[in-house]
Image (cartoon, rainbow, N blue to C red; front, side, top):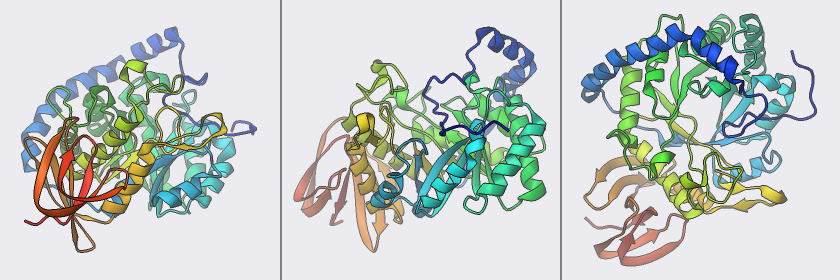
Length: 424
């Protein structure tokens, strides 16, 4: 085990920390060593992709429990004393906490942090140590320690993350499968009640996902975790290779459904958009960044689209506090709640616990009809354009950020609104 260190550090997938693997010669040699696995990744996708597309229309949609759907990622290294208060203020019930194996010496600090969080559930993201990713003896010891310590407070564990980015340690899916299998063996031997998620592929790179879901390893995923970013395409309704967010989710669900290695519970454990004028904290160049208003709208619309796909169990936004991509900016010792903070609170109040009745993609706008406490809520928005909608009666219009007005018409835009009182 590593020696005790003074304070914890978290493995932020957007940072360029010295513990990332950056040696080019090492990477080149590692990829060459994993050539067979990389070839299998390519060949398996050629066969499985068409199969999933063929059977996709036959898969039954699920009724989503909106009490479990809305989640948020919180970090021990970002205002840990303030976080419980913010979680309560937002009304969050489901949280994701990162735990890097290269900080296992400080496990008690993470335990204490989780104990202070007043929420219904915590998903623990057990992040790989890139320098000890294949040490099976050490991994067995570490996973046993993690499960033993966290299981009184956590029942759901994401094993590994961002497996298709070599700088985080994995140079092939085969390497990840051995890593996951080590956790799975410890679970089955001593902690069968726990649930493990994988394989945590980032972005729309489903050839890696296919290899992880179709293999000869003795393992099973209790749910499929995905870091399903769409930020480089702009709005969440935009397409990539002809597929928008809902289409990508449906394909993900189809692959999980036909896989012999997993359930088809889909959990999106990471997504966001980078914020403009936040360098060096933004994960991309300024060209890909968006302003705070657009960020808030895209965030809500991502949740709405994922919810109406009817094939996602939970979405965890990444994350509550982060200068370059969070709901709160904590630079210079200040706590600044961005518009997305109010937007998230409004979305939770209106839709957490609601029953989704229908989703309609009109020519000019999108519409969700939901029921909350015997009231009907219509959620309306456009894909970054405007459209004026007139009603037969005066309605109550709640803005994205929770401001109420009353009128018989509304100018729809990219900022979603929640409307009550529409007469049929």
